[in-house]
Length: 102
Image (cartoon, rainbow, N blue to C red; front, side, top):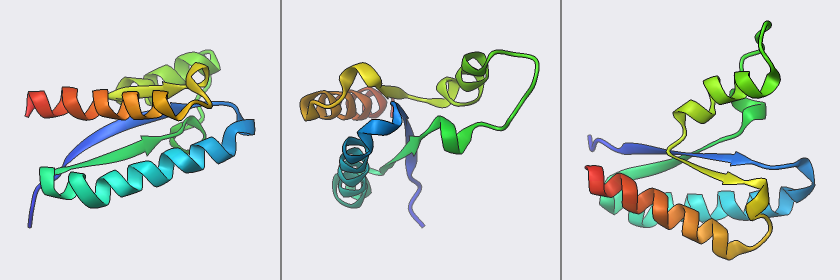
């Protein structure tokens, strides 16, 4: 069984960009199934709505930062939507930085 390095990409965005998020997920899936397999890595997308365990005593942003942002190797955020070029730059940077450390 081949070991795969996991690269975590946090996607931080408002709900009105769901089409763009679907595009990002499609690109990530394509990367995972092509160059990712041959290069030994897989990109995992992180969304605060799916990854945060409800906690009391801190601000919502602090909880997200601790539970999700701290695990991310790269962040694709609201300011980068909708241009696809930023998504590709973020993914390229994520892959390049992580592969340099392998």
